[in-house]
Image 1 (cartoon, helix red, strand yellow):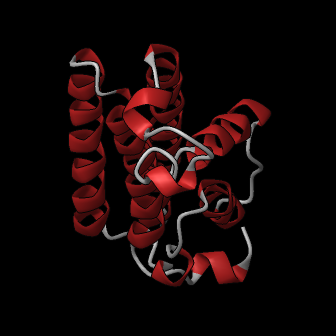
Image 2: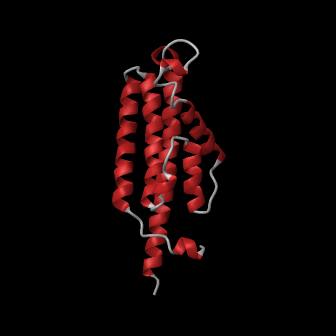
Image 3: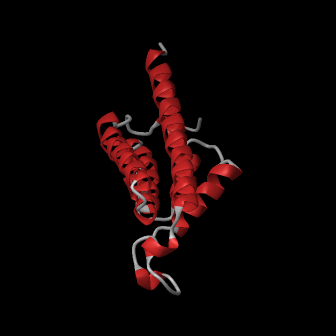
Length: 157
């Protein structure tokens, strides 16, 4: 790790956990909405869950300046850059799919015709839930690695 990475502020578990709890709550709500047939809302909430999980890692690392906006790929690339890694192609593809639902799942004028409840179906919500699960797993994996590395640095003489 570079000196800049070593000089990073301590991890903020409290802030990261606030965002992660919101992500988990959004995922639970997305599953309920999908089960109720409100697939457009499930897609929206799945996207929001992914956003919260990824932004939570950035806030927890103390780089809140990078936790703005709604582009999931850009947000996740910010996380990956902080830990000196790259996004897996499958994660990137899932984040792109989730981002595509950010506006059209909410607003009829973001669609060429119809309304979100008429356009989004089971296949959309199932894919969005799977993609969001992958995003949340990414955020948890990165956070666990950061916590582990932080503890190892603290344990060094």
